[in-house]
Image (cartoon, rainbow, N blue to C red; front, side, top):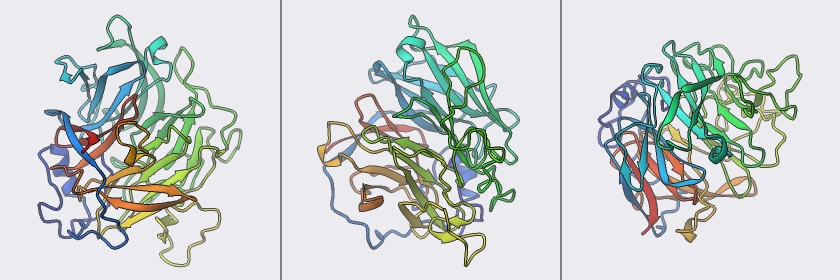
Length: 406
C-alpha cells in the first residue's frame, strides 16, 4: 500500500511514527526510514486556518481511499486494502459491502485493493473501475457495473478486464485511478516495479508501463481499452502508447484540480526526499519527472553530477528529517471553507502531519503546517473528495474524517 523507503528503520520511536493497529502498519514499520522531528521545520508557516476534522465513520479495516459517485451525494465509498469497498450512506456504514474482492486480492505490505474511480457518466452507465494486485501480485484494472435498482451494491458478474500489468516485485504498485478533468480519460499511476533503487531502470524507460502515468480511453463496452491518439508516445516504436508521463518512483496518490485541470502527483521517495510534482492542465504529456536519475531535486543515480536536461523537477519536496512517505491529496475547491480555497493538501504517512500550499508561478508557495488543526491519531493513508468539493482524510487505522470549518 503506502510506498516507503527501502532501508531499515533509523530510530523511529513512538508516538512520532504513529504506529497503528493494522497488520499493514506492522509491515510498514519494518521498512520505514527515519521519522520527523517534533519541531516544525524552518520555512513552514505556522498560522492556523479556521479548519478542523469531523469524524464521518470508523471501524474500517485498513482503509486506503474514500470517494463519491457522480449523482449520488448521499453516499461515500471506502476502499479497504483487504478487498472490500464499504458504503457510507447518510452517515451510516451499510452492513453489505459495495464490492467484495477479498478472494481475488493479494494483501500485505504494499499490495491489496488500492484504488477505485467512478466513470464521469456513472449515473447513466453505472461503471466503476478498481485497481488491485491479484493473488499473484500483479496489477489489474477491472470494471464493474452497478444497476440503478441496487445503487449500494455492484454486480460481481459484470466483471470486465481492462488492463493487466506484470509486477516484478511486491512493492511500488502505485494504486490510484482518476478520470481527467479536461478529457475524461482514465489515468493510472504505476510505480517503478519495486525493490530498491529501480534495479531495472523502469523509471527512465517509456518502453514499459512501470514508473509511469498512463492515460487510456475506457469508453468501450467490451474488455480492454483504446489508446488516445493524442498520447505523447502514440506510435513511437521505443515507447508504450499508453504512457502519458514517466520518471516516477511511486505516485501513490494523485489528483486533478477541478478548476484548472492541473495534475498533482505525490511521488514517494527512496531514502532521503519526498516530492510533489504538478503537470499543468494544458500539457500535451510526455514529461520525464526524473526518477531514478534524481530523487526530488537531488541526484540519485549517479549520486553527483547527474544530467538534468529535459527533466521536470518537483514543485515541492521535504527530507526524511520531516517524514518518510508522502500521501498526495487534493486542491480544495469546496464552498464550506473559503480560507482553504485553492490550497493543495498533502500529508506524511509516518509523521502524521498534514500541510498545504498554494501553487503560484509553477512553484509551491505559502506552505502551511496544519498539525494543530488537523491532528489525527494514526497514519494518513489517503485523502478524498466528494461531489461538493469537500475533502476527507483517511486514517489507515480505521477512520474517515471530513475537513470542516472550525
